[in-house]
Image (cartoon, rainbow, N blue to C red):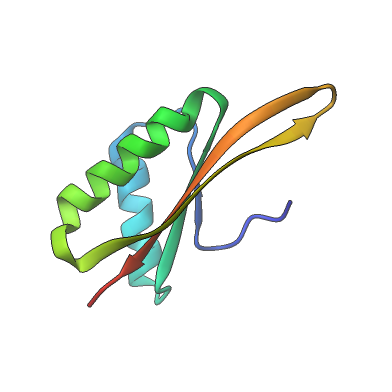
Length: 88
């Protein structure tokens, strides 16, 4: 699976770093940003979304939420993709 430029992959960094990354993506001219967390980082992805909405208020809106899983070897790894759009 190829990762696009407007996708933020959630990992071990603090939530504020991912919020800043999402803002940078939006400021680069992308209309949408995708916040993606898998496994143990699903809840952190939701926290990043909430922090982004809290910071930008009415200038962003939720487009979609996709919850699925991918197969890695013999394991199924759950993930969440939260798509957010700039409204202004």
